[in-house]
Length: 313
Length: 313
Image (tube, rainbow over all chains, first blue to last red; front, side, top):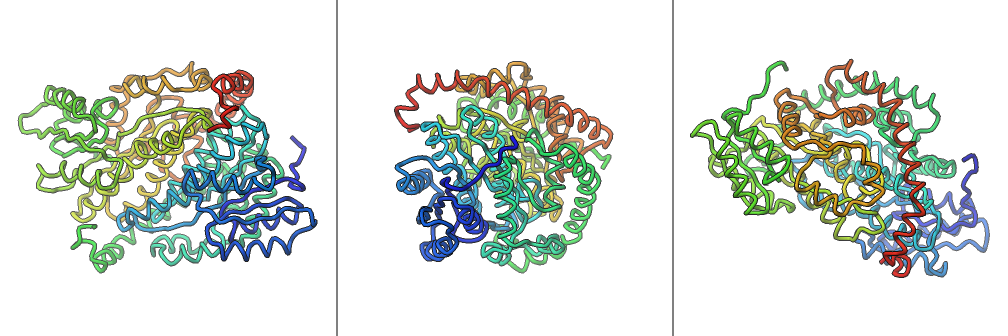
């Protein structure tokens, strides 16, 4: 420990990096002198992102590239990884940042089959299949690289409205906790980041479908800029931190759900645990009361949407 | 509160209940005088299970039934629910126990695409689609029923070998935490059970594929009988407990990852937190050391399996 990781000259691969957190992290790694490859679906957004990366380059020898792939399938993730590694003679990346994802908050009884499936695809499968492809390559080539997962505050706790989303962010936490243990077999290090809400294009989309009660519960929360969130992420990875969080609320919730994952400074851990021990139950009582109070309004909403006549179909 | 839930005369629907925990829970509910419907895939096992249920009946008026359905798809879960509700004039069950599941512990780099997908199907989709179908029906009919999820100790923590499994048990926790909050809108109560290893037919299957290092880490753990585990589950549901656990180790791990979910007695909570605060990091250090020590043996194993020549494919 003590030895900080430096991105300079390393090959960093970021998924979901044509916008939002992923792009901001990519730009910071470019500024740090890394070779940076990004993957996302939308070619138009990738073109814009690559121009921003070019503008941020600090050396003419940096390799910067953007590839359009759908990485929600195992084959897609494998193809994306192969494309990304080609300019590096097939060598595995030194660090992989699994930033792909979006949120579709909906009432459970109103969500459609496709809503659950699409969240599993964009949240869990993008992380799983890329981590799997990268890990196999790293193990074969004996690359002691880094695999960085991105969960969410909602991977640590959840409440009304997040049934299609939060379980997949919990799943990413479970995967990271497993692989942190398992990849000690290979010297591969695993990190997981728990960002809170960010002002990203995805956040705007999310708010269009978000249930009214969920918005009400979140009305005190302040979203942060993705640049700040990316800075927290990169700093955590440089420091070798397993579980990375940057905002106070997330740190409080995390302290109440640390389980067997490694923590940093034990005094900081304890301080947040004490805050969480009192604060989190109080938060829950308040939110539970809000949800129950909202029940008649919600029933009226369902009625107006024709839910009862259609028998929930 | 104070008022205990009684299964007598209620309609209880259990998934994955042709063997193991699900069957034991079904039998106990039969003995409690409930009308019990079970669903699983294997008709032969269902026939045997139904015979056992018939033998356990306490009243001639109890409706006992077994249906063969694959509930890993939304359509399958919907069809199963409709079948189960038919003898009750389409009325939603009073309580649903989502016991379906199996474990396939494997090394992450050795698992195949199908291993991950099948665990998502048998663990997460079976719980999600049935909960979804049932919830919509309960909401439409204004049935203030119970939905009981089954996670695992490995939904609270994880380690080497459980990459296909643990993330889905984490996901079930995320789903239950969300729905506990959300279903206050409808008066539907949500429960989640975290059983440790049980001596079930599934457990034997699981041990056939379990990685050597995972077995080594677990060699001190004692699996329990599914009858005992089912008794803990039913007791928890009767008492109205949200988060149900029966064994000491699980209770310690749970105390370290309570997050915003409700707890029982605050003094018991605190006692387990203190034990976990010291015990869990010590457990992790020991396991981490075991994993690192095992690395050369694991590399030899991968070599012998041809992993490096085949480039992990």
